[in-house]
Amino acid sequence: MERHMRRAVSWLLAALLLIGGFGGGTIAMAEGEAAEGAATVCDDGRARPSNAGWLQVADGKLCDEAGTPVMLRGVSSQELIVTESFLNEQLFGELARDAGVNLFRLAVYTHGVGIIGYCTKGDRERYDRDVAMGVELARNADMYVIIDWHILSDGDPNAHLEEAKEFFARMAETYKDYNNVLYEICNEPNGVDWATVKRYAEAVIPVIRERSPRAVVIVGNPDWSKDLRSVAADPLDFDNILYTLHFYSATHGQDVRDMVEEVSQQGLPIFVTEYGVTAASGDLPRDLDSADLWIELLEREHISYCLWSFSKVAEACSVIRSTVPKYKGFAKEDYTKTGLWLLDTLAKYTSR
Image (cartoon, rainbow, N blue to C red):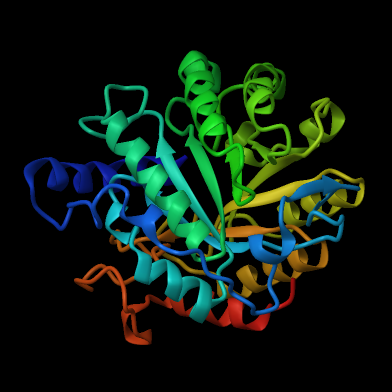
């Protein structure tokens, strides 16, 4: 799809700047600094680790530890190394306290060039450090966090099955006592069928379960995570599983919404780990009216959602304007039209 080519160009340019030492690509804080902060309680009426505890999937819905349905409403990083300067304590506090965000998604790209691409000779130590920082920052800000194995141009998640098993074994062992960590095991499979993705999931999920039995796992599906009918016809045989849906409001309209409503009401547990208010390219046009219809559906069906992307990559789906030089302390004039829509939407939907 056009979106993936555009994303590849965007993060490739950013990666080249990082490799060359330009463009603000330094680590936002020293390794371990985030872990030293004291965890806070954000008492704003939204579902947070301090009040919802370990999440679970019950009767087709994401629920808190007591079994009551909850909503996570958050933002996703762009490619993690490209956007790592956003990993700082002040920003996470602002997102939780001021914007009402209760979820942050950390996108670890599996395939890329240079320092990018965990499975293609990218900087694995740097990825691991960024993930650790993001998890601790989210924990300290009373937010949930998704560790996202960002399959994209590689298409078939089985292409990196052994690397995925090693990665998630290490993540699950490290965060087995963290009630705020969710695992997304394959972002957007494409060019394969559900049986192929299901085989991958059946190999990876037990690796996580062995180390973190209570963790919620989110599973992508074919057609860049829009083939939920195939999933509903042959679901995985595991507890605490959610299935990914991705949409871009200027491209994916009422027909996709109808499909989502249909399978949700049949009991399929869904999580929108990535959506945009733009075309599927990640750029113009924006369709905020369609985006509003999408959010109304997700709220009605208790389907959590995460906006792509909290970045300042020069495309319409980014939340922060590309010319803004800072990575925290944002004022309204620093936000794009996408970002302003996000702030308004988060303010509108404030309940758990």
